[in-house]
Length: 36
Length: 517
Image (cartoon, rainbow over all chains, first blue to last red; front, side, top):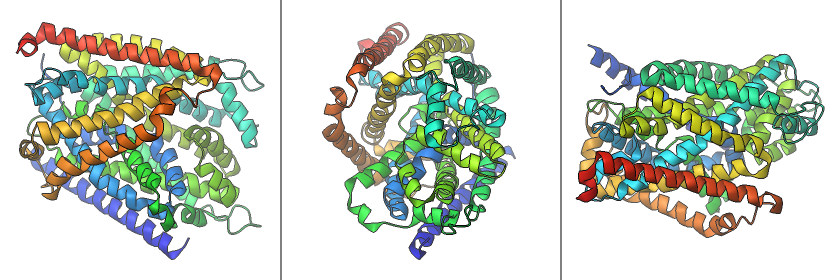
């Protein structure tokens, strides 16, 4: 895999994983807030 | 009768994500990405995600919840509540029932192949097939296209179809909370678990052939991710990216609209829509992109992988992948995991496809869930038969074209225009943020109103320009298959007309004031 390939893959994975973790944390924390 | 609601916020998110995560995530995406510029493909892909997929996701969630507040779970009723002065708009909503029902009819059959192949991988039924020719013969025999040493008829395929169809109906019988939500919650956890195991297995394969150390999964990842910049100049690459985003997120089906109608007015849609979309992207880009292509590259090399990337979904899933797993240590186990994973992805999608028609019967004809499901199951079971018995005559392809390609884009365009222009962007923005857990950046007002509809109209324009003449005139259909394709087309038109009449009857009986105003 070329350096550009690694950059594209890690950037794409990073964006998606970052967004997924952010969304899940916000979703689960708002769920707990609603339960209270 | 009180309206059913989702049990939890995570439940509805996983249900929508389950609807979105399907065969396309694991089979369609890697091939399209590798074929359209590799890493560079991710630029139009992410642009389409931000300008097309995400706005449509929010639009469907919002209008679904809005319509649910008026006891409407499907597009005809929802559209009518959004544009009360126009008594014809409800008829456009028929696409939101027609599309998913048509897809359900053929999708359950394809889904049943996954179950069948999962069982065959454990029992070793296709173990004697050692090359793609033999595996293709096995598939054809299973589908009943030929009688050969592997299968003498459609018996096995029909048995697995019955099991799959009944599974879907049973899940639907348990309702939103007890059936769909529960299955999607557990199903997605198992699906992600299996996918992670397969990704780890593939990426740790090393070089299976010591004589060819360059054939390894990391080089395979390079095949998928190394950017080919020149491809970005081609319009078809941008269209492929937009198409993939459309298909993968399940937007434009009318399914998310129906799911969201079971939310309460206080439930968030902004964060939930984003979370569902991101969950799908995780399954597609990270997991889906790390199984098929790297495994094919490691075992079959670059030239074969190039050919595989351009293969159809069925060839990749039912011919190439079983062969690859045969070459792997403990391949039987991993093949079973692969097919079971895809089967779960299929079930969580197909139950969502069935819901709009069932919800329509429940809401508008005041039927009980059981009555609605019996009617839906009877009609779709009958309509599945031509797909099964005339598979080789182009019936499935024709249904796929009208049910998926056409309905999806047209329905998405109607939704986007209705939301941003008729409902009004100010009102739409307020509705979107009602009970919201996040604040969507303000520039999305502009994107939802102008950019998304424009992109959709462009896609329709290009399709009409490039494909419609040959499609309508059946130029690409073999002469012998034309009567079958024509009959399918007439049948679909009949179904569409039947749904239109049902809407007319319902509004005459139940909403006469809207008809005469």
